[in-house]
Length: 322
Image 1 (cartoon, rainbow, N blue to C red):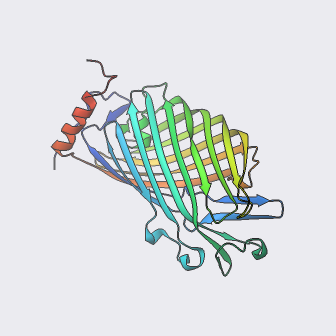
Image 2: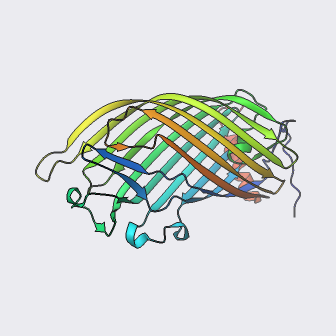
Image 3: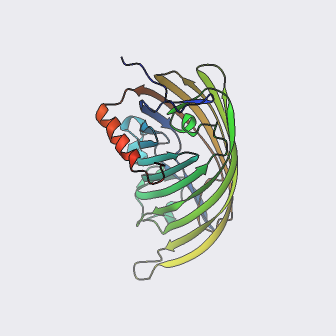
Protein backbone atom coordinates (compact mmCIF):
# COMPACT_ATOMS: atom_id res chain seq x y z
CA UNK A 1 0.00 0.00 0.00
CA UNK A 2 1.32 3.41 -0.94
CA UNK A 3 2.44 5.80 1.78
CA UNK A 4 0.28 8.83 2.41
CA UNK A 5 1.97 12.13 1.75
CA UNK A 6 1.38 15.29 3.72
CA UNK A 7 0.60 18.36 1.65
CA UNK A 8 3.44 20.88 1.53
CA UNK A 9 1.08 23.73 2.45
CA UNK A 10 0.12 22.19 5.81
CA UNK A 11 0.94 24.26 8.91
CA UNK A 12 1.48 23.44 12.56
CA UNK A 13 -2.25 23.65 13.32
CA UNK A 14 -3.57 21.18 10.73
CA UNK A 15 -2.41 18.71 8.12
CA UNK A 16 -3.88 18.78 4.63
CA UNK A 17 -4.75 15.43 3.09
CA UNK A 18 -4.89 16.66 -0.51
CA UNK A 19 -3.21 13.54 -1.82
CA UNK A 20 -6.01 11.22 -0.71
CA UNK A 21 -9.47 10.35 -2.01
CA UNK A 22 -11.77 10.38 0.99
CA UNK A 23 -14.88 8.15 1.13
CA UNK A 24 -17.32 8.50 4.03
CA UNK A 25 -20.57 6.90 5.22
CA UNK A 26 -22.98 9.07 7.27
CA UNK A 27 -26.05 8.21 9.33
CA UNK A 28 -28.32 10.89 10.83
CA UNK A 29 -31.90 11.47 11.96
CA UNK A 30 -32.25 14.98 10.53
CA UNK A 31 -35.72 14.27 9.09
CA UNK A 32 -38.36 16.78 10.15
CA UNK A 33 -41.98 16.45 11.19
CA UNK A 34 -44.61 19.21 10.89
CA UNK A 35 -47.73 20.34 12.73
CA UNK A 36 -51.09 21.23 11.19
CA UNK A 37 -52.71 23.73 13.52
CA UNK A 38 -56.14 24.94 12.41
CA UNK A 39 -58.82 26.50 14.66
CA UNK A 40 -60.77 23.24 15.05
CA UNK A 41 -58.01 20.62 14.91
CA UNK A 42 -54.30 20.03 15.32
CA UNK A 43 -52.16 17.02 14.45
CA UNK A 44 -48.63 16.02 13.48
CA UNK A 45 -47.50 15.19 9.96
CA UNK A 46 -44.68 12.64 10.16
CA UNK A 47 -42.44 10.65 7.80
CA UNK A 48 -42.33 6.90 8.35
CA UNK A 49 -38.61 6.99 9.06
CA UNK A 50 -36.34 9.39 10.89
CA UNK A 51 -33.06 7.87 9.71
CA UNK A 52 -31.08 8.89 6.65
CA UNK A 53 -27.98 7.30 5.15
CA UNK A 54 -25.48 9.17 2.98
CA UNK A 55 -22.37 8.37 0.98
CA UNK A 56 -19.81 11.16 0.53
CA UNK A 57 -16.75 11.49 -1.69
CA UNK A 58 -14.25 14.20 -0.75
CA UNK A 59 -11.15 15.30 -2.63
CA UNK A 60 -9.12 18.49 -2.23
CA UNK A 61 -11.56 21.42 -2.37
CA UNK A 62 -14.74 19.49 -3.30
CA UNK A 63 -17.13 17.34 -1.31
CA UNK A 64 -20.17 15.59 -2.81
CA UNK A 65 -22.74 13.74 -0.71
CA UNK A 66 -25.75 11.65 -1.76
CA UNK A 67 -28.30 10.77 0.91
CA UNK A 68 -31.25 8.37 0.91
CA UNK A 69 -33.28 6.11 3.17
CA UNK A 70 -32.70 2.45 2.24
CA UNK A 71 -35.37 -0.16 2.82
CA UNK A 72 -33.81 -1.54 5.99
CA UNK A 73 -34.16 1.91 7.64
CA UNK A 74 -37.87 2.15 6.80
CA UNK A 75 -40.44 1.49 9.52
CA UNK A 76 -41.62 -2.09 9.87
CA UNK A 77 -45.22 -0.82 9.84
CA UNK A 78 -45.09 0.73 6.35
CA UNK A 79 -48.31 -1.13 5.49
CA UNK A 80 -50.07 1.04 8.10
CA UNK A 81 -48.17 4.34 7.84
CA UNK A 82 -47.06 4.22 4.22
CA UNK A 83 -43.60 4.52 2.73
CA UNK A 84 -41.24 7.48 2.90
CA UNK A 85 -38.71 8.18 0.15
CA UNK A 86 -35.77 10.47 0.87
CA UNK A 87 -33.24 11.97 -1.50
CA UNK A 88 -30.48 14.42 -0.58
CA UNK A 89 -27.70 15.90 -2.70
CA UNK A 90 -25.09 18.14 -1.09
CA UNK A 91 -22.05 19.92 -2.53
CA UNK A 92 -19.32 21.68 -0.51
CA UNK A 93 -16.75 23.94 -2.17
CA UNK A 94 -13.75 25.19 -0.17
CA UNK A 95 -11.71 28.22 -1.23
CA UNK A 96 -9.17 29.71 1.18
CA UNK A 97 -11.25 31.06 4.10
CA UNK A 98 -14.62 30.47 2.44
CA UNK A 99 -16.91 27.45 2.53
CA UNK A 100 -19.86 27.30 0.14
CA UNK A 101 -22.55 24.67 0.52
CA UNK A 102 -25.44 23.86 -1.83
CA UNK A 103 -28.04 21.30 -0.84
CA UNK A 104 -31.14 19.67 -2.38
CA UNK A 105 -33.51 17.72 -0.12
CA UNK A 106 -36.72 15.98 -1.18
CA UNK A 107 -38.96 13.78 0.96
CA UNK A 108 -42.15 12.10 -0.25
CA UNK A 109 -44.63 10.12 1.83
CA UNK A 110 -45.99 11.09 5.27
CA UNK A 111 -48.72 9.99 7.64
CA UNK A 112 -51.03 11.54 10.26
CA UNK A 113 -52.23 10.13 13.57
CA UNK A 114 -54.77 11.35 16.16
CA UNK A 115 -57.18 12.78 13.63
CA UNK A 116 -60.89 13.47 13.21
CA UNK A 117 -62.20 11.30 10.36
CA UNK A 118 -65.17 13.58 9.67
CA UNK A 119 -62.88 16.43 8.64
CA UNK A 120 -60.46 14.38 6.55
CA UNK A 121 -62.62 12.22 4.32
CA UNK A 122 -60.66 12.92 1.13
CA UNK A 123 -57.50 11.17 2.33
CA UNK A 124 -56.71 7.46 2.45
CA UNK A 125 -57.35 6.21 5.97
CA UNK A 126 -55.74 3.01 7.26
CA UNK A 127 -56.79 1.98 10.78
CA UNK A 128 -55.28 4.56 13.15
CA UNK A 129 -53.39 6.56 10.52
CA UNK A 130 -54.00 8.77 7.55
CA UNK A 131 -51.53 8.01 4.79
CA UNK A 132 -50.29 10.91 2.67
CA UNK A 133 -48.30 9.10 -0.05
CA UNK A 134 -48.17 12.16 -2.32
CA UNK A 135 -47.21 14.76 0.26
CA UNK A 136 -43.80 16.15 -0.71
CA UNK A 137 -41.36 18.52 0.95
CA UNK A 138 -38.65 20.18 -1.12
CA UNK A 139 -35.78 22.19 0.34
CA UNK A 140 -33.12 23.88 -1.83
CA UNK A 141 -30.58 25.82 0.21
CA UNK A 142 -27.21 27.49 0.13
CA UNK A 143 -24.85 28.49 2.94
CA UNK A 144 -21.85 30.79 2.63
CA UNK A 145 -19.41 30.75 5.57
CA UNK A 146 -16.21 32.68 6.28
CA UNK A 147 -13.54 31.87 8.89
CA UNK A 148 -11.47 34.63 10.47
CA UNK A 149 -8.75 32.39 11.90
CA UNK A 150 -6.74 30.57 9.23
CA UNK A 151 -5.46 28.11 11.84
CA UNK A 152 -8.97 26.69 12.27
CA UNK A 153 -9.71 24.00 9.69
CA UNK A 154 -13.13 23.91 8.01
CA UNK A 155 -12.30 20.66 6.28
CA UNK A 156 -11.29 18.85 9.48
CA UNK A 157 -14.86 19.29 10.74
CA UNK A 158 -16.93 19.22 7.53
CA UNK A 159 -15.36 16.53 5.35
CA UNK A 160 -12.18 15.32 7.12
CA UNK A 161 -9.90 16.31 4.22
CA UNK A 162 -7.65 17.90 6.82
CA UNK A 163 -6.57 16.81 10.31
CA UNK A 164 -6.51 19.43 13.06
CA UNK A 165 -3.24 18.82 14.94
CA UNK A 166 -3.36 21.73 17.40
CA UNK A 167 -6.43 23.20 19.12
CA UNK A 168 -7.88 26.27 17.42
CA UNK A 169 -11.14 28.15 16.99
CA UNK A 170 -12.61 30.89 14.86
CA UNK A 171 -15.40 33.42 14.68
CA UNK A 172 -17.51 32.40 11.67
CA UNK A 173 -20.30 34.51 10.15
CA UNK A 174 -22.54 32.85 7.60
CA UNK A 175 -25.46 33.54 5.29
CA UNK A 176 -28.13 30.83 4.96
CA UNK A 177 -30.71 31.13 2.17
CA UNK A 178 -33.04 29.01 0.13
CA UNK A 179 -36.48 27.83 -0.96
CA UNK A 180 -38.85 25.47 0.83
CA UNK A 181 -42.22 24.00 -0.09
CA UNK A 182 -44.81 21.50 1.14
CA UNK A 183 -47.17 20.32 -1.60
CA UNK A 184 -49.90 17.71 -2.07
CA UNK A 185 -52.90 18.02 -4.36
CA UNK A 186 -54.98 15.81 -2.04
CA UNK A 187 -54.65 18.11 0.98
CA UNK A 188 -56.25 21.55 1.40
CA UNK A 189 -53.09 23.65 1.63
CA UNK A 190 -49.63 24.08 0.15
CA UNK A 191 -46.94 26.38 1.48
CA UNK A 192 -43.98 27.85 -0.40
CA UNK A 193 -41.29 29.95 1.22
CA UNK A 194 -38.14 31.89 0.36
CA UNK A 195 -35.86 32.70 3.28
CA UNK A 196 -32.52 34.21 4.22
CA UNK A 197 -30.84 34.21 7.64
CA UNK A 198 -27.62 35.93 8.71
CA UNK A 199 -25.76 33.98 11.41
CA UNK A 200 -22.68 34.63 13.50
CA UNK A 201 -20.96 32.12 15.74
CA UNK A 202 -17.79 30.73 17.23
CA UNK A 203 -16.46 27.22 16.61
CA UNK A 204 -13.57 25.47 18.30
CA UNK A 205 -11.76 22.16 17.82
CA UNK A 206 -10.01 20.67 20.86
CA UNK A 207 -7.20 18.30 19.92
CA UNK A 208 -7.18 15.79 22.77
CA UNK A 209 -4.21 13.74 21.58
CA UNK A 210 -2.70 12.45 18.34
CA UNK A 211 -5.88 10.67 17.25
CA UNK A 212 -8.81 12.08 19.23
CA UNK A 213 -10.50 15.46 19.02
CA UNK A 214 -13.70 17.24 20.05
CA UNK A 215 -15.45 20.23 18.53
CA UNK A 216 -17.94 22.75 19.88
CA UNK A 217 -19.97 25.44 18.21
CA UNK A 218 -22.54 28.09 19.06
CA UNK A 219 -24.19 30.51 16.64
CA UNK A 220 -27.17 32.82 16.51
CA UNK A 221 -28.94 34.49 13.65
CA UNK A 222 -31.74 36.69 12.45
CA UNK A 223 -33.55 36.54 9.15
CA UNK A 224 -36.75 36.78 7.19
CA UNK A 225 -39.12 34.37 5.45
CA UNK A 226 -41.41 35.26 2.56
CA UNK A 227 -44.28 32.77 2.61
CA UNK A 228 -47.07 31.99 0.18
CA UNK A 229 -49.99 29.90 1.39
CA UNK A 230 -52.23 28.31 -1.23
CA UNK A 231 -55.64 27.06 -0.04
CA UNK A 232 -57.88 24.91 -2.22
CA UNK A 233 -61.48 25.83 -1.42
CA UNK A 234 -63.30 23.42 -3.73
CA UNK A 235 -63.47 21.93 -7.21
CA UNK A 236 -65.57 24.77 -8.61
CA UNK A 237 -63.82 27.61 -6.80
CA UNK A 238 -60.44 29.21 -7.47
CA UNK A 239 -57.56 28.67 -5.07
CA UNK A 240 -57.06 31.31 -2.39
CA UNK A 241 -53.50 32.65 -2.11
CA UNK A 242 -52.24 34.58 0.88
CA UNK A 243 -48.77 35.99 1.50
CA UNK A 244 -47.07 36.89 4.73
CA UNK A 245 -43.59 37.63 6.03
CA UNK A 246 -42.02 36.11 9.13
CA UNK A 247 -39.11 37.46 11.11
CA UNK A 248 -36.97 34.51 12.20
CA UNK A 249 -34.48 34.23 15.05
CA UNK A 250 -32.48 31.10 15.72
CA UNK A 251 -29.76 29.64 17.95
CA UNK A 252 -27.73 26.60 16.92
CA UNK A 253 -25.36 24.48 18.99
CA UNK A 254 -23.23 21.46 18.23
CA UNK A 255 -20.84 19.16 20.06
CA UNK A 256 -18.82 16.40 18.47
CA UNK A 257 -16.22 13.76 19.19
CA UNK A 258 -14.01 12.18 16.55
CA UNK A 259 -11.11 9.85 15.83
CA UNK A 260 -8.45 10.38 13.18
CA UNK A 261 -5.65 8.29 11.76
CA UNK A 262 -3.89 8.67 8.44
CA UNK A 263 -6.27 6.21 6.79
CA UNK A 264 -9.32 5.61 8.99
CA UNK A 265 -11.50 8.14 10.79
CA UNK A 266 -14.92 8.35 12.43
CA UNK A 267 -17.00 10.38 14.80
CA UNK A 268 -20.36 11.53 16.10
CA UNK A 269 -22.05 14.86 16.72
CA UNK A 270 -25.16 16.24 18.41
CA UNK A 271 -26.79 19.32 16.88
CA UNK A 272 -29.51 21.48 18.43
CA UNK A 273 -31.60 24.24 16.89
CA UNK A 274 -34.07 26.64 18.51
CA UNK A 275 -36.09 28.87 16.18
CA UNK A 276 -38.49 31.66 17.00
CA UNK A 277 -40.85 32.82 14.27
CA UNK A 278 -44.20 34.56 14.07
CA UNK A 279 -45.98 31.79 12.20
CA UNK A 280 -49.22 32.64 10.43
CA UNK A 281 -49.47 29.42 8.45
CA UNK A 282 -51.51 26.44 9.62
CA UNK A 283 -48.49 24.28 8.74
CA UNK A 284 -45.93 24.95 11.45
CA UNK A 285 -42.31 23.91 11.89
CA UNK A 286 -40.55 22.53 14.96
CA UNK A 287 -39.43 25.44 17.14
CA UNK A 288 -36.89 23.33 19.05
CA UNK A 289 -35.26 20.27 17.57
CA UNK A 290 -32.13 18.17 17.88
CA UNK A 291 -30.51 15.44 15.87
CA UNK A 292 -27.42 13.25 15.84
CA UNK A 293 -25.04 12.15 13.12
CA UNK A 294 -22.50 9.35 12.98
CA UNK A 295 -19.82 8.97 10.32
CA UNK A 296 -17.00 6.62 9.37
CA UNK A 297 -14.56 7.00 6.51
CA UNK A 298 -11.36 5.86 4.83
CA UNK A 299 -8.70 7.71 2.85
CA UNK A 300 -7.51 6.04 -0.38
CA UNK A 301 -4.74 6.81 -2.82
CA UNK A 302 -6.60 8.39 -5.77
CA UNK A 303 -6.35 7.01 -9.30
CA UNK A 304 -3.90 8.96 -11.46
CA UNK A 305 -6.65 9.86 -13.93
CA UNK A 306 -8.74 11.33 -11.11
CA UNK A 307 -5.75 13.31 -9.83
CA UNK A 308 -5.00 14.73 -13.28
CA UNK A 309 -8.64 15.71 -13.74
CA UNK A 310 -8.61 17.69 -10.50
CA UNK A 311 -5.29 19.31 -11.45
CA UNK A 312 -6.90 20.50 -14.68
CA UNK A 313 -9.99 21.76 -12.83
CA UNK A 314 -7.87 23.69 -10.33
CA UNK A 315 -5.86 25.24 -13.18
CA UNK A 316 -9.09 26.80 -14.50
CA UNK A 317 -9.76 28.62 -11.23
CA UNK A 318 -10.17 32.31 -12.26
CA UNK A 319 -9.11 33.49 -8.77
CA UNK A 320 -5.85 31.55 -8.74
CA UNK A 321 -2.72 33.66 -8.96
CA UNK A 322 -0.33 32.82 -11.77
